[in-house]
Length: 512
Image (cartoon, rainbow, N blue to C red; front, top):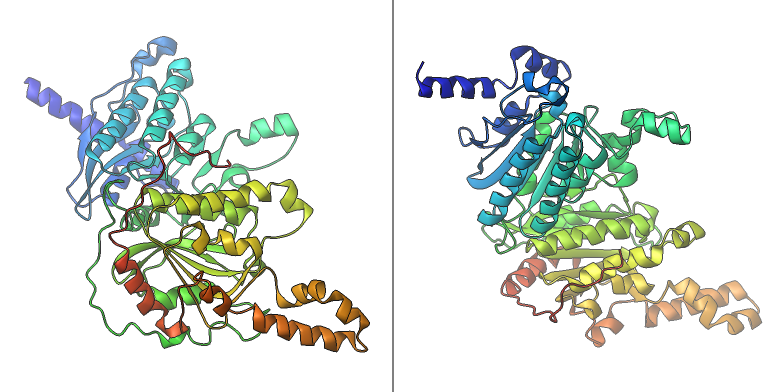
């Protein structure tokens, strides 16, 4: 057998991923193999593997007799809709996908190449954790990956898919990437597993309850998206990447679009006349953006604010919107963190921001104060104030108190601020303000209730409208709802050449 034939034989062994019986077991669990995932994710025939012949170096615990080429991770590069991306996929059929020194070296080499070439990095995680036979070498491998995650942050998009177990130190790499997607019922993430939890706290909990996709998409906010199976997860990765550029030096690609009148009559009547009646802000979003282009992020976490990507006249934008349908759209600890993180991600990758405002203020209560609403609200304020991408705001109904300032007001650097005719911009609602300002008059009146209603109307006429703010230049224009899309297309087009020079500094100190 020639050297070439020996090499070919080794490559075939590597591509089989450890044997057919291992692949069958993977399929029985409702999961694709690592190589199937890579080939489904990338354009057909585009994958070029790197490091297929790598093996571990461990000789302890009779490991020298257990050698599989690739060492439990498939690494390489290919294209998604013609765009270069680097991909690694952990192979659970080889040593449980556990991370060894060489396993980590393969991933680190790939990350270095992604940064050098300015291309996105996608990680398909399916691993039992550190390879315990290697001790500190495997732990060092994790740290090498973490360090590169930080160095690549804000330089190239980093996307993580959790397609199996991800426990212990392994969770910190996905946590430092830009977006995380989890597969329902077959994936989980936690720092300490159910057995440790039971030992330490005496709590009985399953892996799914502790760190499954449902838990992290609704309670912790650790995962941004969930998918019913591996195939849908990979489709979501491709969709998500379409809204992002290759790196921080580029802008997202535009899709072809032919401008029409862009008037959207369906936006009329969405906002109820009763200021206390809720409505679904997603209807407003759908009336503004290109059809079927909204990709919502964190859709089941902190539902009182909506964030996601969309297209406006073929161009990628990020949307942050208060949701009156949930908690009246108030800002609280979780919604502030959610919107702040999304703001910074868009700003990293040159995605313009549209902020839709209907906010009655911050959520009051001891729970919020004790959990740091001050510093968490400040995160959103900081993120928007620091963002240099084009920023446009539309106030659809309420903008009260400090939340008016925080939600991309003109005062913190928004480029254009619009308001619908029924918008109310004030320190607080007319009723609460009247009870304070006219307290004595109402108390002395023969009919206090009638007097309160009178003063409420007086206050509303003077302050609870967008025209006072427009007179001061805080609102650039009061627009009809049906004209919103047309106005936004023109506003963002005018901002395409925006350049902002920030003060020289090492970095800011966001209130983490």
